[in-house]
Image (cartoon, rainbow, N blue to C red):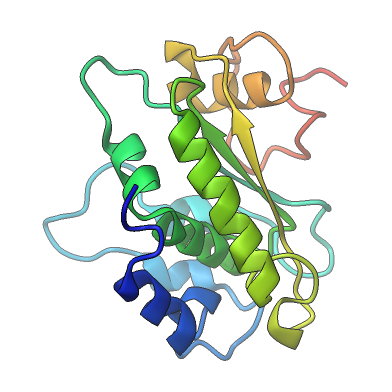
Amino acid sequence: MGRLHSPRTRKRADTGAAHGNHGNDAGPGTGRGNAVEPQGPWRRGFPTGKKWSVMPMGTEARRPKYVVINADEMEPGTFKDRFLLENNPHLTLEGALLAAYALEADVVFFFVRHEYPAASALLTKSIAEARDRGYAGTNILGSGWSVECHVHESAGRYMCGEETALLNALEGRRATPATNLLSSDRGPLWKTHGRQ
């Protein structure tokens, strides 16, 4: 918990790193997903750039668009999410904001394990600090882009590691995976999984 107000974190916030000042002036809707395609032997799993490339972009995309961060680690003996959220919640928030900017998202949900109250509290405080500084909320740094961030405490189910089960739980439904394979671009949250 001691790094929430660390000099390094504050320096990042003060110098602009925390609000997307990373040399990308292209603005929303320019296919930034391609910039995150990994190269080389360290690539594991399904590449982020490929996931992002299926998201509808531009003015024709359905709204609102969501980014959901899964911090509900339920595998026995794991605590990487807890460690990150309790030691540097600003870093997690910055990554989520960058993902939301790249995908032109309107809302970010942090799906945090119920047994991590300190992590939830620190992340909530970080979001409030970012909002106070103009890094989150309405018209971020005068850019015209807005994104709301929310912390959702999960009820804690191992199945929430699966994407559709997590979205069901976020919607207040039973955390059961969908029987049909759907991709992340399937439509608005709260109108998914074949149910209206």
